[in-house]
Length: 101
Image (cartoon, rainbow, N blue to C red; front, side, top):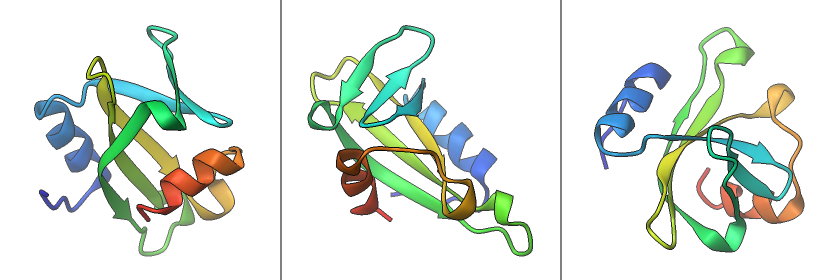
């Protein structure tokens, strides 16, 4: 798995490797806003993840997940803040994402 020094470097590297869909958290699912396609926790796998911690700014703390749908139709990224800036999500999604933190 490649190692990245910055969030932007990770996003660019993953995009170059075919992870082109931008996912967003929707409680217990992830969704691609451009297509409206929603994946439940059983419909995707986390291929890799990269954690970034800001030296002095809590808003710099985030995790980038490289995600692939199990049917092979989608590959993309989910950027999730953690700590005080984390998104509201359901227990199923918390469990799936926390395994990789």
